[in-house]
Length: 303
Image 1 (tube, one colour):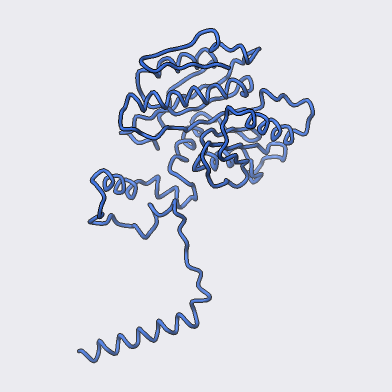
Image 2 (image 1 turned 45 degrees about the vertical axis):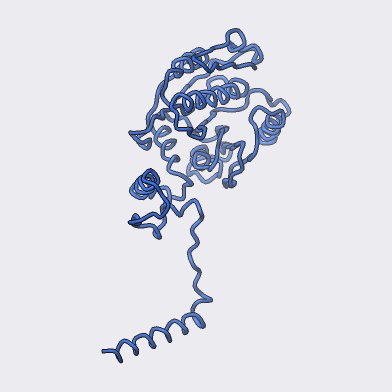
């Protein structure tokens, strides 16, 4: 028995040496990007003991490994499961169409940008679409992120900076090929999946996400075409009523949307505002006439 084990060990050792010397140079190992480690086959089961990790971290990892959207996002090459939220919203309300110009605010890590590129035919690969129906997707975020193919990515860009406005206008002017390009209104859809880092305090987190929504709305009012669409994520709370009312003053149709990909235990929900009414003087918007204030933290929009 001992001799058999030793012989087996020797044979396996020889096979390993043969592989390293003769076959290894021709075998390309599969490399998993860092963003894919949480759902790669290397973690097909939940470790029994996560050293140094508390129960919340273990619960999060267990949920990630068992989440069908996480697994699906990896196999369909989306950067995050959030891509399916936009896919499901678009499947129901058809907000993204070939030839459109899209701005994705807070684009990192880029999953919504990937979906937008496909839906507006920014890559020119959609069957049955003519060349002039090739859309444009501009993704920007204040933090760095990996570029998305066929999208114009502006990492570390503040949407309220003069540099951002000029950059967007020059991009769209080059795409349109016209000197009569309207520098103020050139976006068909503004997407915002922005959310702040969670503090653990629901009221503070809610106030912060509403601030981000108003920031995206300010950008939208300045650059959205009449009849355009605005989609933003909020966390449910006391100030959502004011935001919803402001949207109703600017858009003809406003509705709450909770896509199936959004977890049931999550406080997030989306506000979909369609058919932008337009503003004659974008620097005299309704926000300048009245400043809304709700609770301990007020929201001030000055255009």
